[in-house]
Amino acid sequence: MSGMLVGGLTLRLRLRGGKVENVEIESARPQAAVLLAGRTPEQAVRLVPLLFSLCGGAQGVAAQAALQAAQGKTPDARQSADWAATVRREAAAEHLWHLMLAWPPLYGLDRLEREYADCRRRLQQAKSDDEHAAVLANILTSNLLDMPPGDWLHLGQWDAWRDDSSSLGARLLRGAEDVAGVHAALLPHTTAADWLVLERQIATPAYCAAPTWQGEPRETGALARQHEHPLVSPLSAVGRNIEARIAARLVELAQWACGETGDACDWVDAVRCADGSGLARVETARGVLLHRVRVEHGLIAEYAAVAPTEWNFHPQGAYAREAMLITASDNAERKARMLALSLDPCVGYEVVLEQAD
Amino acid sequence: MCLAIPMQIVEIDGYNARCEAKGQSRDVSLFLMQDEPLAVGDFVMVHTGYAQQKMSAEDARLAWELYDEMLAMLEQPR
Image 1 (cartoon, rainbow over the protein chains, first blue to last red):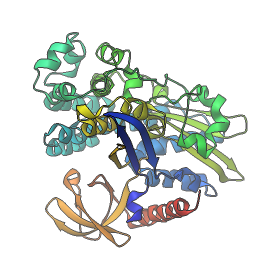
Image 2: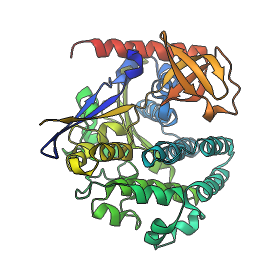
Image 3: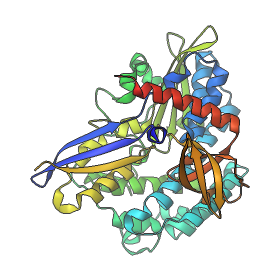
């Protein structure tokens, strides 16, 4: 059904002489946010989580924050904390989904379906931030680290843990078949105000489909956030980016389980632009999410959203750069799939390898 | 971005369901929703073969109206 393909990616690698000579990223992803034009702000707040349901919490928060900013309203501390908690809880569930369900089949392992279903239920039932952190700590100990996350964060000697532990986390790191040699071009930490210089561009479909920072495509997500962490930085320094991305997700989960969740404004903030539009920035599991909305006479005149997948699967972005280093001799299709999963597109995708000779 | 598809359950067999949308059907795992009572006729949001959440018929209808508009956009010459 054509509807099933809405939003999908095709990652096409063309090989010649044993090397990738071209990477083409085809997107069947419409700029769905433009469908919100002409509707009321209340309708938009209801529709956004339906439109973008995979990270519906973050998308809903981005819509509310952008609309409030457009109306000149500032959220109080309670609302900011609620928004941050919504986004953080969703990010934790997304990271766990990624590590427990998405990766294992690529290693020939069974998905941890039963365990994930149990984790999801327990996390959803957590009534406070402290309870959520405690449940997450328990989940990490049992399913991913084989030790309490607080101890793991202070190991210092992650190499030994990585090499010896039978935990899923260590196995995922050990099994990452990296395409060594290229340094990731990472998006720096930003606030909503940092995006004001690009505000006019963000309003255009061309920018939303292929965003850049200081004129370049950048990688967003856990690696961009955690690249300075002592477990992650030695990996990314030598271009072991697939492993670094897995490590960065483990680090984030462990930090959140230890209550190291930062300030509410690290997760969500918004600004009012000069033309009265509102611009929100939300930090999701997969990276930065931007919503820009302009309201006129009580109706949405313009709506634009820039999602993490647009950064990481930019035609000259992280996937394209790193996939160019794959060679036919090193199990090209498997590496192309691992690379895609490490960057975790939020839509269905297929990897296609073509021989040019 | 982040798209999941609303589908209606037409058959349930344990943790597996046959779901339909727009006249097409798919096998969908209900494994992640074990604590939520689901019945034939219910609507669920489906992503990568898993039902993610239950949704009202009204929300499913609204979502499909938006998807239809998206499909129309895609079919327009660029």
